[in-house]
Amino acid sequence: AEKAQLTAADVEAKIVEARAALEAKVKTAAMARPLKEEPKELTTSDASGAPVRIGAAEGGKPVLLLFWASFSAPSVKVLRVLTARSGAGASRLVTVSLDRDPAAATGVARDAGLPSLPALDPEGKEAETFQVRGLPTLLVLDTQGRVRYRNEGMGPGYEIQLKAQLESLSG
Image (cartoon, rainbow, N blue to C red; front, side):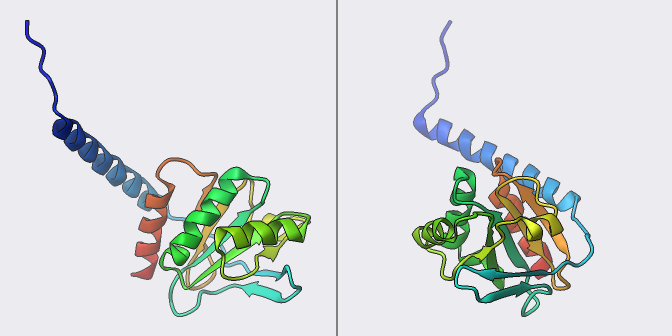
């Protein structure tokens, strides 16, 4: 009996097909369960002591709100991805570090290429307001300041889900 041999092109085609199918499933799942939480506001300060306040989105676009810490490798990875994508189309990327040491948060943010200082929440008060249960936690706030998307951790397909949510909210 002869065995069928796959060429490199056949394998590549199968991979592309499987990836497209997975992306479609993840996008559908993300759109199937949009969140409609009550509007929330964040009021804290950044590492320099300047106030940071966020509620309703600016310019009719969603706002990305990332809770992270320098000691969390997944947090740092998500921070780098979001910084590289320049907020992934959001009007504003707000990062909130739960580090107790402002220098640690500032150093990681600078290394990740974050254009502004991170907001600080060393006691976790803002994290509690936004019901953060793990790091990193990425939230998308709609134009009224409601959490419409929540991703905790960094599981497979989170970038696809984020893109789907931003597209649906940007209309």
